[in-house]
Image (cartoon, rainbow, N blue to C red):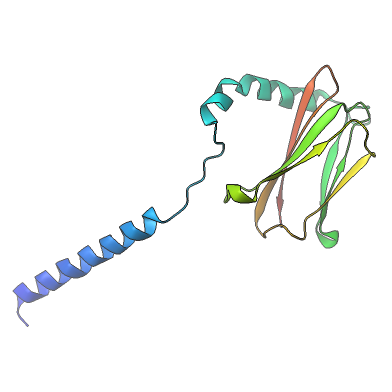
Length: 146
């Protein structure tokens, strides 16, 4: 085999490699954080206020809340505030938006919300808790690894 045939063979192998990579990359799913990303950016000041309100809450008050992941029991325990009017717990999967789900919470509730996690896919999850006491809105987020 001479140099000319070797160079042509290297170019053909390289072009095949590039073609394969382009094919594989176009088949990869890319999920946005949110479908209405631009509207969420406009409303982000409200989110900043929710986080600030949650941080200002002193432990032991009627609006304090905690989230705990109990890996051995396969559940997330959310201690709900006494003054909760409405709330929502969102399980957000950064890698696959099809696995995201929400758990609404009404004013008539026990002091704890137990959410089973044995059916959840293994990996990284963000548990986002948004609630309101009728006057202010609050937001707390925990990251868990199942």
